[in-house]
Image (tube, rainbow, N blue to C red):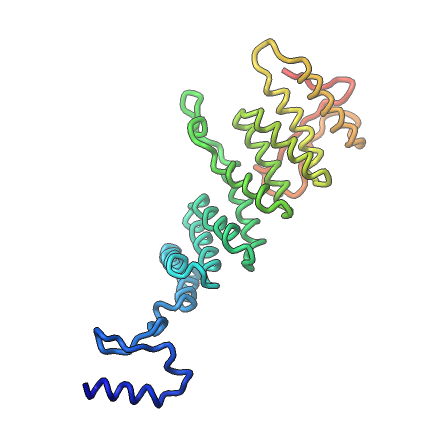
Length: 279
């Protein structure tokens, strides 16, 4: 009892700024508070995580950041913790898991200072995964049974950040991915959406050509719809007329903005009057 009286008297004489965060625990008869333990402070925890990341202890950094996001989802440190979760997963070679962390920032923390970098990192992850060749067994790949991870990445970028410079890029890459997966109807829809939505984009003209290619490649067997062939030819003519500098021979058109070899798309065009055979 005397100890309790002493504690109350001591608290009464403390400065007002010192004791509002402290309460007396009836069970342990000790002072405690919401942030009395430094280890539970999200800002301190985030600094610890960043230090671990800088020391290349990526698993430790990830675990600490995950704890911050779980315990303090409304804290200002939560979005930064998600960013370092993504960075750690990238370093641990788990690109899709990194994308999931970045996407949570776009969904829940749109005012994060990392938004532009996160969008760029998501696009890079999607392009990297799309550029990897899947191993085949009996002519089949795992993507004949499971959705390709880059599909979700490119769709989210084109739909959720339409004002970003990566939106039309993602839309174009999504169409190219559908072509590589032989999902030609979806490829046509994707390129048509790009043409309609981004008429001023640098990907507008290449998308017109790829729409024609997807239309032509979508034919099956010896019998096909001649209307579709005419449509593909018309779109190819539009593409050629928009590039008057192409006059003869065969040309490789490299879409702008790409510097990585696997991202280059070679469009081989045999010029009029000899047009490409549509098989």
